Length: 108
Image 1: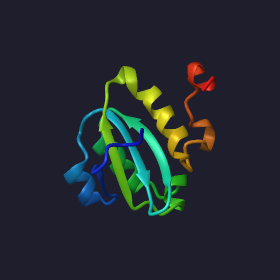
Image 2: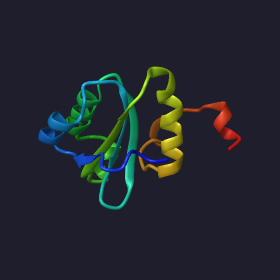
Image 3: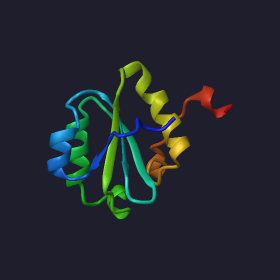
Image 4: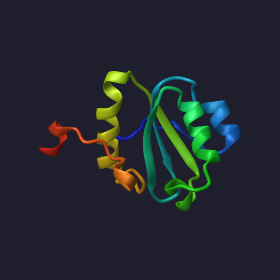
């Protein structure tokens, strides 16, 4: 299941500061036609702001326009991240081996 409905915001510094929590969880970055990246962080807001300021990465090449997030515990984040990456078919999670490898999901 993808991110919760109604939980999409513009991928701009103002919107991230206003809408993203300074809490741990999972976030997804997208544009009008595709999911670009799904990540995890201890502080979703700060992690998204870091992505916004990084001009030399895969995410920027796909012209991101929005983000979604969900709060989650550390114990669940990595497995939820992998499920979302596979379900959404992100463009940048496979760069540099950035796709987590959970043995139990390989059988799915």
